Image (cartoon, rainbow over all chains, first blue to last red; front, side, top):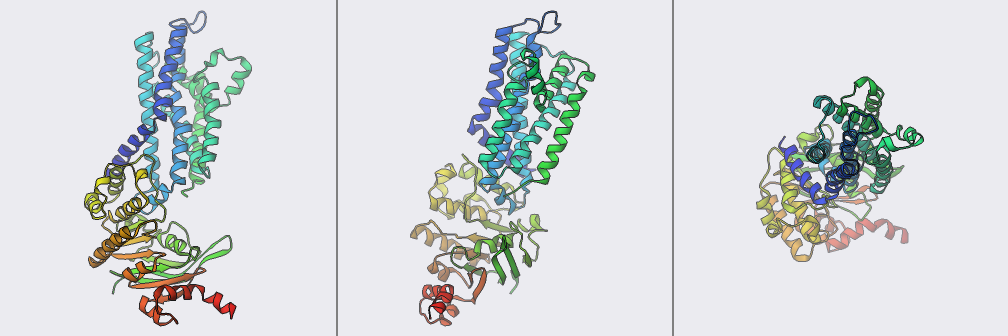
Length: 247
Length: 243
């Protein structure tokens, strides 16, 4: 535990010094929440809707930090530590290199949690948003989305031969998901053809789940999303562990 | 004398090209053992197979009577390692790296004392990336000594250091040796090997071509200086071919 705490403490500091997650995981979601709020205010999500546009978007915007941390931050830091042989150096100490991975997962989970808090704060204070569904259900959904995104990140970071490959894979996953999964550009305004393509992305399914649980919609509507996310988590974790390279 | 490191008939090939061939040696308690050889002779591969960061094709290794792969966690409580290239996180400071390293061990010595011993006290708050090559090298020796090890592995311990810094490192190693530390080191500097090593093995193309003390190595060669003797051992085949 001493090693975990010291390492978490150090890695958090290093990550904050790096600045990129401050921008992509903490500032960006708040800015997007603010823009959506200013543009659409407390207008209903669609004519006759019982909830506002802001309420409809909350779940999506809350997922931005998960996406940034999971498919950008996490794979890059793992690939970097492998390329720099930091994992190898840890192999000749009593700790397991697994510890540093656990530490990184906690670092990015913390970013996601802080981002969730900030996005909710922004929506609540400026746009009178309240979570309609149960917080417990929403937290469960948030955790599942996080697990599935982080498992994708572990797979990319754990198996990419070098930083460059990890960077390419991370970008290929990150930017389309950020734009087309509904995290930034609202899913509801996309033409149906684009929606069908977006549906193939795991994050789109995650955002559907987050939306449903934040709006208090029945879980029956999103069971497909739950199954997809569980499948992604199981498969990616399995492959990440099976094909993991320390060096 | 108690055996601290025992290597028996170690073999390792990369893509069918042998890198280490039938290497065997033992290092006793409190000994400084030097593994010598030209670049590519198999020194680093040998060390990595001993440490278990590479898997050997055949042969057995034991350090402190433990198997480095099976008893990894128990063994590395008591073994310090300095790899040839320094591995550290971007933007990490000297004190953070020391504190993080210290946290990995159940028992450890204070990094502050070690930093002072290696003249790095003023660099405590500096970024590791901003240290000079020599300072960084000394920092990684400090990291290897933080667990208060019984055995340390130092791969090219003074490469990149200036003469003064090298002498300082020798002094520290000699002091540690006097306290009973066992050291396995590799080096390209023959003056260093003469000053520090009780026994040496010279590797050529992955095989040991000489094992024994420095003075015996000189005596068994047609030369008077150790550096000449070393070159004679590593280049023997070439002169043989030219005859």
